[in-house]
Image 1 (cartoon, rainbow, N blue to C red):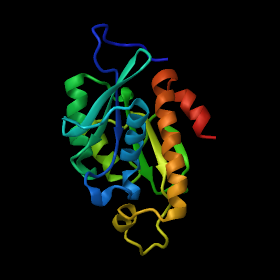
Image 2: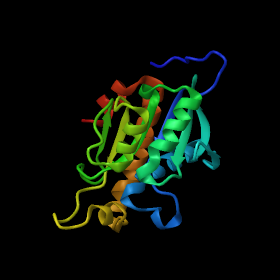
Image 3: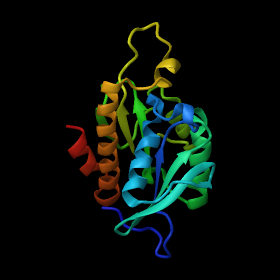
Image 4: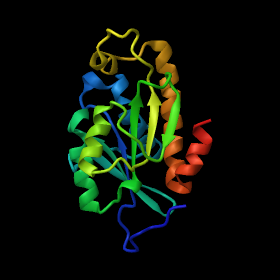
Length: 198
């Protein structure tokens, strides 16, 4: 269970969805983090439109916990610039920066909750680790499936759109990832790992 560190109010968590801004990237594999932030915002009926720390943001509360929802607008490979800036300004330690990203090593729609971990070749996570100076931050990975054959360009794969069959699985996974965020904020990472990693 998390307790407020700041009795004067303020932000307890950053919840960061990784993705690329712009309509052309909306339903691409790399943007499942953005989709999850949109799902969380929709549940709270708030827009994530305030430009702060080079991200579209808004604050939400889950019981006594206040979180800043973030969609960095720096483009994926520079996401750490936005998150590092917000973390320093709001004095949020890495263990309370929850990151949602795509994962090409997981089957389409599969979720994995982790307390920490390497970038695993993900450029957005690499940027976060570089700017936070640690990989000790929790994350929710959403499986987008691996590229169809070894010669296929990875950038083309993650910037490609989901075929209709996969889109159904991804929409379900995004709802699951939003459930996992809510569980982490209210009951902790272990609770979410127990529920979603099975």
